[in-house]
Length: 358
Image (cartoon, rainbow, N blue to C red):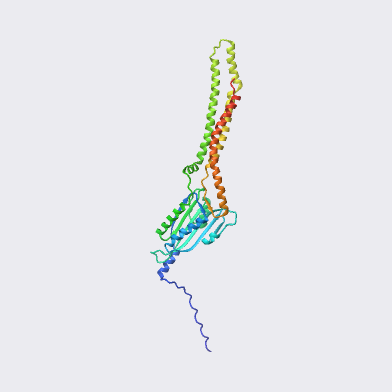
């Protein structure tokens, strides 16, 4: 009995690359190898709009195209105030995206992945570019950790905007050149203010204390003048009686009446009590004005990531409040002077009524 024919062997699956082994090995190591990293942080108030994101994309893409780079992927990650995020996988997706929720965008991460064939390399290598924009320190930490939990985070001031550049590259000259290009461009987004405003914001607590001190100083000087007038009056009356010779019973009686009347009226005790109340009231008013002045100027220019309708509305409201805060500071300064004078006048009038000469 004859054996059945043997079925033909299945063809082996193969994958062919149009390059030699050394070129393939270099290409894979360029994709999987650990590249060098450049990082740069820029602090200060800024404003990021959808148009500016598009401008930055084209700025980077045009520069990379000079090295015949091929864009593998571009993403935009938007972080919102409630911690939610949206990841958009192309510039086109980002351009047509509109957030329907009434929520404010507080940070954004732009990320490019390129394959670039450098002249001294046998195969294209992966290069990654990442820009982070954040309106505050807390949002900056959230954005950075959202990208990589193992990445070290640089602690920065909480109320200042942050822009961060991160470039993972395999050609240092290319990486340094791109980092310089991005840093120079991002610095143009910074909002600069007069130096005196920056100094006043920096020393807001000391300025507030100085204004409160000015108020209590004016009031205290007025108090000293009032006490001095009272003492001068008492001394004048006493010297007048002391200058008269005690030769008659009437003169002696007048002197005794003066001493007894002064002791019985309790004017010195009432004067001390009035001064204490005066100083306590003035101190409370001064501290209140000082705190008001300090908090009014402790308002650095905020940063804005204007990638949602709510963020745009918040910008208008925030700038109005900030302008009003500066008005409040100058009002508190004038009020500190006026309060010191007014309290001094009130005390002087009260003194004339309650602390009359015997």
